[in-house]
Length: 393
Ligand code: APR
Ligand code: PHB
Image (cartoon, rainbow, N blue to C red; front, side, top):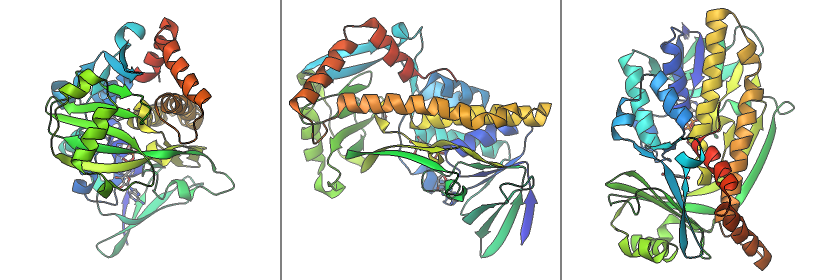
C-alpha cells in the first residue's frame, strides 16, 4: 500500500474541495484532493451560475478571479414576473450597492482546476472506494483504490466535500447525525441554448401554469428553467414543447422577443431542502452539498458551499499559523447558522414562485399578497435583496 502524508485530506474535487485546496495552498498549507470521477466528468456537469459578493471575494483571495471578472456579468438587479407584470428588485439600491456576478459554476470549477494545476496542487482523479478513517483520533487517514492498488493519505484533518451522495456524511455515526429534509412535489426542467438571453437581468416568473426562470451564461449562451411534475421525463419534452411552455409562462413582451434554438443541454432536477447536523465529527468537517442542499430558486447552492469554505479556510489557517483552534471548534455552529438562513430564503422564494399541486384558492391569493407586499415595501425588497446578494459571512 502506498502512503502519502499531507496536512488536509479533501474528499471531492468539486468547487468546494478545489476552492479550499487553492486557498490553503496560498497560505502554505498542504492538501490532497481525492476525486472519484475524471476531470472532464466533473467539468461536464451543468450547474447554476449566480455568485454572491462573498464568493467573488473568495475567488479573488484564491487568485482565481481573472476570467470571472473578464467574462462574468455584474448584475445590479433581478426581475420577478407575476400576474402579467414584471417588477424589478434593484439589488444595488436595496442592499447598499451590493451586486451579484453571473458566471457559470462550470467555469468556476474550470478556473479552480487551472489554478490547482498552475500551483502544482495534488488532485487525484478516479480515486475509488474512498474511505475516511480514525475520525476521532489525532491521526486520521483516508484510504482509496486506484489502478487496482490501495493507497493511504495520512493527515491532520479530513474535509468531506464530496456532495450529497458522497461517503463523508455517511461516515458520521447515525446516533450523532441529524438530517432535516423537505422534498418538493415538482422538478426543474433546464435547457441550455446558444441564444441571446431573454433579458439583460434574470427573470423569475410566477405563473398559474408553474414557475419559470430566464437566466444566462453570457450574451450568446442562455439558461432557462420551467417547473415540471416529478413524474415527467426529459424525453417527454421536445425543444419546441419547452419553448412554447416557457413563452406561455412569461409576460407577453418577453415571450414575443424570446430567441429560441436547439437545446445543447436539457435535464430535469428534483427540488429538495436538506441539512445535516453537525457539520463536524472529530477530525472530519463536512462542506457544501455533503452537508446541505437548497432548492435552486434562491441561487444559494454554490454560495452556501462557499461560506462553508470561508469558515473552514479561516479555521485551518488560524490552527496552522497561530495554533488557535477556536475557528475549527465553532465551524459547525457558524456554518450551520448561515446555511439555515440560506435554506429559509430558498424555501421562501420557492413558495413564493411555484405552483404546488394541492394549492387552494386561499394559498394562491396569499402568494399574490406576498408578491404585492414585496413590491409595495422597501423593507421587503431590502430583505429580499440582502439575502439574494448574500448575507455577510
Ligand atoms: N469519493 C471521492 N469523490 C467523491 C465521492 C467519493 N466517495 N463522492 C462524490 N465525490 C465527488 C463528486 O464526483 C463531485 O465531483 O465529490 C464532488 C462533489 O462536488 P459537488 O457535488 O459539486 O459538491 P460541492 O463541491 O459541495 O459543490 C456544491 O454543487 O451541486 C452543486 O448546487 C450545488 O452549487 C452547489 C455545488
Ligand atoms: C442558473 O443560471 O442556472 C440559475 C440562476 C439562478 C437560480 C438558479 C439557477 O436561482
